[in-house]
Amino acid sequence: MALIIKSECIDVKDGICTTSCPVDCIYEGERMFYIHPEECIECGMCESICPVDAIRYDDEVTGADRAFIEINKDVFQGPDGGLVSPGGWTRGDTPFRDHPAVRDFFKRDFEEQTT
Image (cartoon, rainbow, N blue to C red):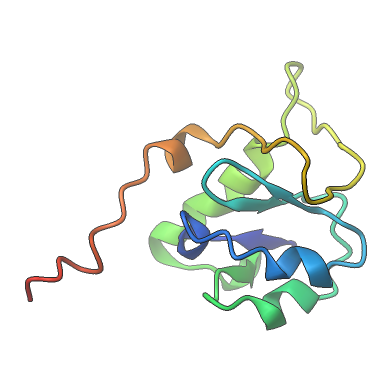
């Protein structure tokens, strides 16, 4: 079981989750944050503090958000296909390049505000 960050984080990037992480395993991307699957100790601190409810244990994720299980892993894949462990994130680090699915993700303007 691993913690992942889902679509609710895209273009929000509040970052409060990074302040509660005791092992600095949450990394900033261009549009969202990502949790490193091997560095995370699964304490759940980030899940409890996320203001947009974007963080879940992977076995709790359903529907379209299941894609974010792989997205969170893929961001940390090296050229050989293995996981790269950057060793901890700090504010001011250069953001990771987002996963292609995140770069191309389109949020409907709050469910088409014309309803």
